[in-house]
Amino acid sequence: MPTDNFESHQRGLESPADRHQSIVPSDGAPVDPRPRALYCQTAGDVALEDRWGTVLTYAVQAGQVLPFRAAKVRATGTTATVYGWD
Image 1 (cartoon, helix red, strand yellow):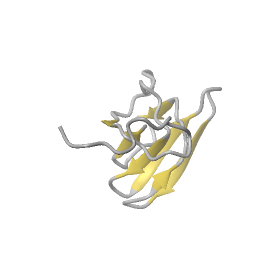
Image 2: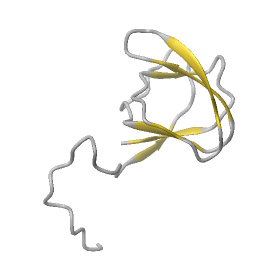
Image 3: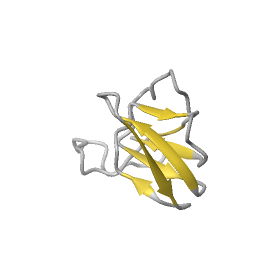
Image 4: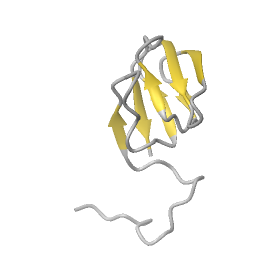
């Protein structure tokens, strides 16, 4: 196992992510666990639902990072490939 010089440091909201997950867009299932940011692998649209149920669609570019804790990445309206960072 490689040495982690930051293992004893407390993780905060300003800390870099250390976990990532594939996100399959769904109109019904929430993103679990909720990420602290989304990385857009491909350009397109991403329909995000917040924890209050508000849905907005964002036009994104490949490589763009959205610092948003989405409750859902909706299938309807999403054409980009996104990953969750936490």
